[in-house]
Length: 149
Image 1 (tube, one colour):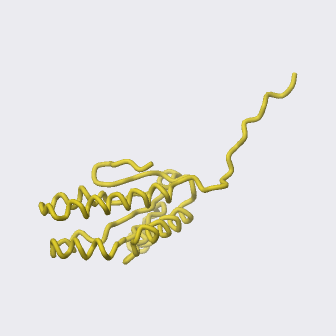
Image 2 (image 1 turned 45 degrees about the vertical axis):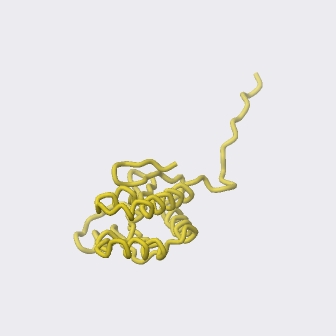
Image 3 (image 1 turned 90 degrees about the vertical axis):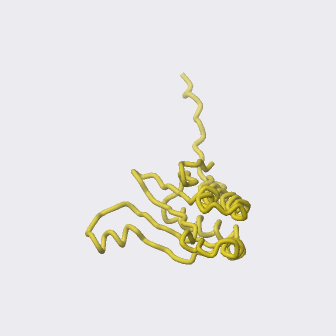
């Protein structure tokens, strides 16, 4: 289940990084988002700085109908778009975070954006929760009975 950490919705995934990325992409599509841009931070830092880092991917997600509504209410809102969703590894664990759109849009001071922000927040929370959910049919160890004496 996702938790709010200041300005993000965040959770961890039990599946490897690359599979988590594919699951996030599928869940974004399910919730009506397209991925407008993708930044492979690990590759970029390696190429530009020679830094060795763990996998870190930023997906710039957009739900066109909601973006259209928001931009119609606040044309300068494009400076805060798209909604970023990140998948990264840290200390061997895969993490998923998404911007808390409700909180982000609250800084604008336009009351017409509140319901849009809430809807985007709810959709992104479902994306990260579903992407991080235990895969069906996953291996679950069976507790063994004590050996007979």
